[in-house]
View (cartoon, rainbow, N blue to C red):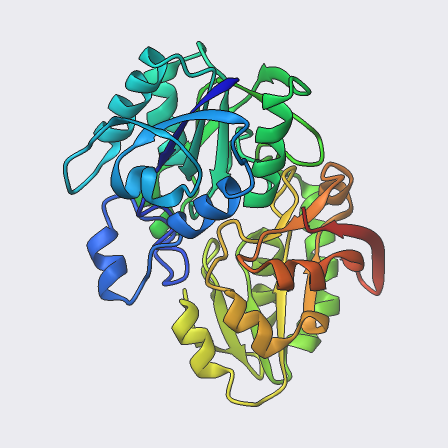
Amino acid sequence: MTTIGFVVNPVAGMGGRVGLKGTDGMTAEAARRGARPVAPGRAREAMHSTGKTMDIVTCAGGMGSECLSQPHRVVYRPEEPTSGRHTREACRRFMEAGAECIVFCGGDGTARDVFSAVGRRLPLLGIPSGVKMHSSVFARTPSAAAAMLRHFSEGKTTVVDGDLMDIDETAFRKDRLRVTLFGHPRTLQEPVLMQQGKRSFDSADEEAHQRAIAAFLGPVAERGIVVLGGGTTTAAISRYLGVEKTLLGVDVLRNGRLAARDAGEGDILRHLDGAPARIVVSPMGGQGCILGRGNQQISPSVLRRVGAPNVVVAATPHKLLQTPTLFVDTGSRTLDQQFAGWRQVVVGYMLAARRRVMAV
């Protein structure tokens, strides 16, 4: 029987829907803004189908046992409030208990804590629940993590070197992206179920394509309500309109003018007052996530209000070429299925490419 170490960061991802771009050091502020924990639910979704085929060692309480319905062994009891220190100690206890793989629920910060304790001794598998997840140790969705875990227990996976990335959240909240490579943990390989690391694209040719996309979608954004996701492609649309948007946040335009800057879920919902609305997003470079990585403000409630047909996806041709798989992880399996299938991706002025969007 395969022994799995399982740990949850209970506050991971709380800052996403309220526009904090991360939760590191911001748990109290996230709660003040009305944020609710998301990691426990995503951990349960991933682990509920593992059954009795694995020996699971975990932590007491919200860092593990509360998210498990199947038999398990508690090998560590952290005191409250929990922190990264407890995650690191939990992983050391898991290794002492004979764990063959560490499964964790959180974001890039949690991945760093796990890697700092485990190093390259064991493979890591991340259940995505953070705001920003740029590392290649994460499954695409909780259900994909469940499938990967089953495959690992059956000896059907390959262990490879991954990339552990993390960003400076303080700079991120000031609209500056500083991504650092922290190491190469061992992880599991499966091209459909596991996400790739984030890639950046920067060239004069990219800018020309972004301007062409902006010239096509800019007039669209001058009518009704438009929610613009983060990134350089959507920033080109705002420049076309003469609007200063947040590069890494979500903004709301009304008839081509800025209505809400760096908006959270609540801000967006307040502006969706029955007027025609669209959402414009761009996939994360190399990784391919359209919804669910860095734009959790565009929540299931927002998506239901706007409707899947009114979500516009845009990407430059080179970015799309280097991002062969597109997927969504909205937090709602029903919505993920609505987005699945073949979709048009705007790649230039009156130009689009058909790409399949996956709901894993």
